Image (cartoon, rainbow, N blue to C red; front, side, top):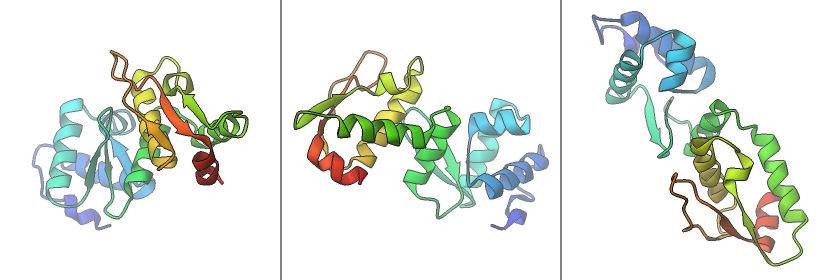
Length: 168
């Protein structure tokens, strides 16, 4: 990535551009909150810099509804989603193992998985977990229409045999 792409974009805070670009070089992606927290930027400054970098094609913006992440070009949408889940404190290996254990222990052909139970007390993270499960178990999710008032999918209906194949 060309760090000089951020130069000259803003006379207000050129150091913010360089800081965000250096962060993205190290971590592949950043959220606005991550830019604020890690780099000491205000919300408005982080938003403005990130939008300018997207407009210039230096970063790619992925909107997952509950969160927006800005990544280097070439970072897949799934990798961006994993970055956001990590930012919310969701341990991906633990989540995959939990899903594999649930599916392995299933005695019926169809089960319900409750994303809010996999991210307790974190409604936004639960929405992202639901999205991650739908992507991970692509083709195994039978029903994904049940919603809570908080915007979290209450449950996902899963075809056990297909889920077992997807989880290996």
